[in-house]
Amino acid sequence: MVFSDLIFIYLFLPLCLLLYYIFPNRFYRNGILIIFSLVFYSFGEPIWVGLLVISALVDYINGLFIGHFRGRKIAVLGVVMSLVVNLGILAMFKYSGFIAENINLLTGANLPVPRFTLPIGISFYTFQTISYTVDVYRGKAEVQKSFLNFLLYVSLFFQLVAGPIVRYTTVANEIDSRRFSVSDMSSGFTRFIIGLGKKVIIANCVGKIATDALSFDTAPSSVLSAWAGVIMFSLQIYYDFSGYSDMAIGLGMMFGFHFDENFNYPYISKSASEFWRRWHISLGSFFRDYVYIPMGGNKRHQILNLAVVWFLTGLWHGASWNYILWGVYFGVLVMLEKLFLGKILEKIPALFSHLYLIAAAIFGWALFYFEDLTKLSSCLGAMFGGGNAALYDDITLSALKGSCFVIAAAVIFSCPICRIVMDKTEKLAARSGVLYGISRTVTMAVLLGILAVSSVMLVEQSYNPFLYFRY
Image (cartoon, rainbow, N blue to C red; front, side, top):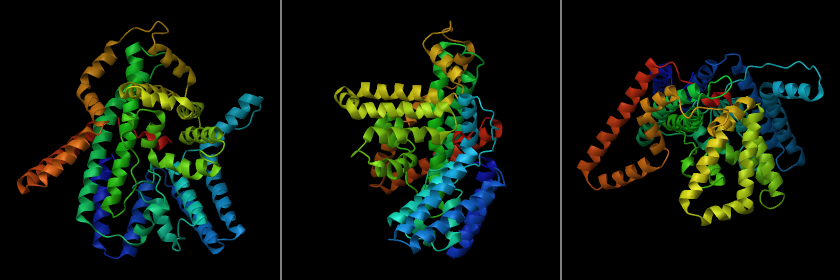
């Protein structure tokens, strides 16, 4: 089940909210959230619910162990066990086939290649439980004594399957103590509907163009097809993932949880370094706090530290060489910016540094899209007229014309224009009761319109993928 699903929007979520707020007792409310979260997760593959519970149990015990021996050397054993078990599970399900294939390729061996179905959300919840044990060891988090409370943290359906990666310290107090707030409920619904619109109205539309343009056997049909496919995918992955993050944050607010932001208009950046401070913030901060800084950060072996972090960033996204190359690609850009390129970008006009980032991001997403490196080469070649590619093709041109308003909206909304306008409107409306009422009415009408259009599109369209389920 995904958030952009009519069953979730009109059955699962209302039923969960109803039962949750019927019971004023926190214990029952936590229990309801656990049950609904496990049911939500079981829609993917019911068998993996057991793996989720086992993973939570392992790190619940590790947390108790670390807390009991805190301040003594043996406490580090709890962290080691957490890393071994969690990374071991992740490696088995996500990377064992990739490792076996490459050993066979390099050595000529004939090792059996495991083919596991990847449990949905495993890349996210393993990192969450690792962050908990490390923070308990560092003294930044208190030990959670209740297994049910810890299971709630791990299994919350709001962000379980695709993030953001929520650290235990972010929600520790709210697990034990949450209060209903009309403001939070209103903001939560607003954020959820905006995220739904980003996903269904924009991401699905531009994603269909990208899929059609980049689904070729040997090479794209034209230069236009290659460029349109990669640019539309660049928009799709942003609106797909940021829309899901908006929905997750909004859902959290409906139930009294407050998650950190995961996106902050990354396409307005003027460097790759800034882009990664704005894109998938929870993942970047995880690698910064649990890998980069412990290795020495900027103080020693900075280049080595960056190389490790960006290799892991690429590998985290998938067991394929294109993801590793994508991580290395951005790692090299960040290194160059730290060495000298960043100073140049600061001195040149902002327009040019912004264009540099947009171009860098587009080529990066081409690397990310194609697991088949031969197709990647063909696409990059076609983008520059190689392979006798035609300048344009009628199918792609027609698709772009038919979606021109959605594409324009995608470009506009990738900038904080709407947020600036809304902030100024709210300030003006606050000075007058009449203006405030009009502002609230217009906002409500827009939100209901987004919900209605999204619902109709979900009924009519069969194309409704969610990209980050694969990672």
